[in-house]
Length: 231
Image (tube, rainbow, N blue to C red; front, side, top):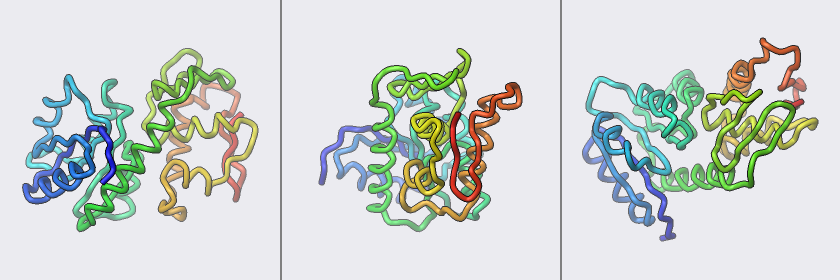
């Protein structure tokens, strides 16, 4: 198995499933902590947040989607990637989770080796974007790759990981059309369902957060049938 010292926090209410996930991911030399309730999870990460979260079911009244939203709303965990695991899934549920900030989404039953591959992919994707040089400015939008943050006009943009990745990719190609295929493969991975409205919904939310309604300048423009362009 490959060596990787990244840390993982697992939330899963089913004891057997929780231990299976923990055991499998630990065999890849990842440091794993596993919890059955959200309260245990949030207590444990106060002083030592992980590099990635895996959210399954839990043994309390709070849903995993609620946990995801709490993670995204915190300045300490808002930019940490999250993989969601659901017992049942419809397209609406997947889109809701992705729009709430999930970086990947799996449905039970699933293969634990596939989960390990997805963890590796999400870590590689997000770490690569965090490890860049200092601030880059595009119009009045500032991107801080090393902090995974973005500002517009000096105001910090409260972005999910996916929204940040979309914004950075569009900014880095300012003035050029970025195709839908490239946006999907870069931000969601090669297995993304390009027939869904996930990308369009993320772009809509990103536009709102950029405050396009407050400015005559349209930051992100659509090129119908092709993709999007920034600037």
